[in-house]
Length: 530
Ligand code: AHR
Image (tube, rainbow, N blue to C red; front, side, top):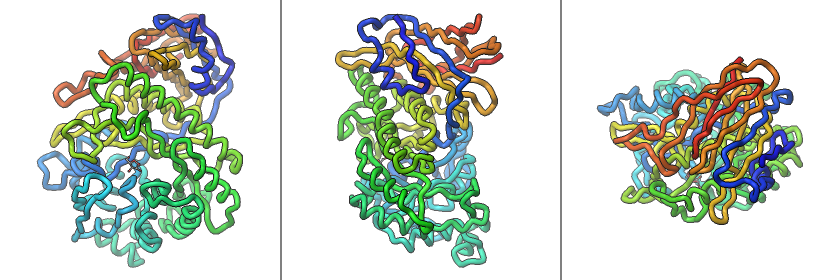
């Protein structure tokens, strides 16, 4: 028995709650989806596909930076294989240099000919050589064609230091700060599209009460000025956006206090974004393995990741109270699966493998962000390379693309697309006490004018024949890509890098209906064409 829900943009959790569990058996094959193209929703900002690269483990050194003298092919020290892979998925922005690292980062150690090494106290006590600093980061951003999201040090730095950093990056070279940058090889001001005013100030960033942080943050919001002539003017689309530290998970204390303060702001300060950090981590400290896991772990991870929807809904409701016009974006700038470190890897490097399950996690999160596109206008997966839920893994000269990378590639049509509501019966996937929706679906009208449908089958064992009622118009063709794997714990390795890669999939279109066979444990992205 299938059941339509008349909820145009219904959150997945709600659909799951409505799913008639007794009526839908584990092996039921059919599912129904109805695309309602007549009521388009908000634009899905491409920045929800943003990345995060912290000085942590081999996320920067080895992952991005190999140095100009390396035998690994590179341009000015930045490895070319990684740049090519990232260019291919149109990374919209990269958040740098942290994370917790950002609140102990002193930018002057990392510019000019004389770098000063430090101890990376947050992440394994490794030596931070500071050879990858501001100019190298900007070079990297330029090479991959992305926007810079720079987090300034509010925790252990000074306001003067942060303000000087902004001047170094953005001021005219007739000023001393600009001349310093010019002397280091970059005459023109850099574009700093986003600035983060601290990181996790409720935790590793200084354990501050909301009001203490707010008082501090207002000064940073005012004085971390961007001097780049191309970014001046409040209504300039290129103007720098300030992102304040916001909530963790479903703790609303920062959200409430920050938004109340923002609603009472005067001309002297503002913010354009509030950050949310929320990892998929059913147990703390993270202890679930990233390889060789069974269905218990699979189901509990998916259950945990789906709570992202309720967290966003909770913070959005508070933000709506103070900001009904949705001027302040909710920026989910740390999300992803946080698992046990790989056995034998250096402690504190947060190295984990990446499986088919993690690809499903990524797709479900993108679908949640898309449903909340009116408020969630930016998100940054943690992290880009070699750390946590990575898109890329490297080992010396070797590089592989993870299942999570391929989800980013498949979701390219979502970048700056328009949300198109769908109605669907989620069905149920049940494992022990855990009951989850079996199917998830999101449709968009892409920037190229085509209609795309993302379909996720969470069931690890049973496929699903999906019947999609198409909007009016002559659709004659449905084709795209599907990511699936032998097992939910299948991974790509340096020896076998193509175990989890997208393959072609096609639906049959007739009489305004598309039918498509969705494999078990899969994510499909289908283009519907006339
Ligand atoms: O991504 C790893 C760490 O997780 C970040 O440094 C910190 O902000 C968060 O707690």
